[in-house]
Image 1 (cartoon, rainbow, N blue to C red):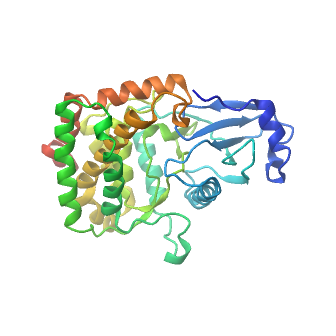
Image 2 (image 1 turned 90 degrees about the horizontal axis):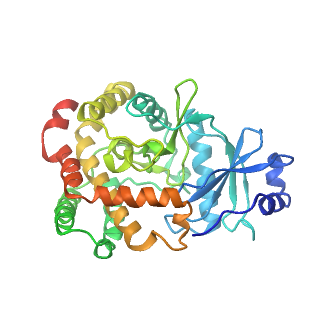
Length: 347
């Protein structure tokens, strides 16, 4: 399993770059290594964090990933619910993917369901940011075809299903969902205006500050896309169980209350636009996550893969993914769209 940098090596590397001026004179200490793609270092008492990429889940070259994330932080900070970017440290020998210097959010992982309302508030602010003109949206991706784009991700990840050692029941259920997704996508795109979305919005990517405000802190996959995908990924059991520090299983009533709070705050017209697509895109988001789990099992877990930095987190992820592929867990997840309970709560 790969090891993080030593504080001495990192300090020496930062000393070479004027963009790291804010780190001068501050002791560096590991804040967390449990993220799949990044390590985070506390910069003394400066109120800053050094966010160090160690891989790109989208396969981006280091310079491109660094520029992409920097843009995401700059644009999302206007919401008041994402950290401010102070600078970037360029790619170098010690930092082969560079680093970002961002605000430290003094907060705790969400406690569900108590902090769901705060997360809904954060989504409202992020999703209501003005959409830039088309020519100004790069380097961030734009998914005007959010369903087709998500299906492309699912199909790419589904190639790993055969190597994930799934039970017959799990394979059959996922095959059924793949068939549905392809049919759903063939009907065309929903009439939903894109907005800035976090994409990887499981609760573990939020922090709750002392005032109860939710901050979205992992902006690796930010793009312009469909808001219901963010809402789904924050409340599906496959996502709420991902981070051991915020793991919880939500009831249908709690999920419905979360959606209703968001819809009440987003405005009547926008709520009416989104409401018909909440459950179909929840279904698609579940399948996106399950095929990602298959990729983890077949290609990423264990060994010296960068995604397996933190031994404790890797064990938790392995157990969570195995549990998510159990027949009972799959049936419980699919009940959201195959049974009427959640639809009735939303209505």
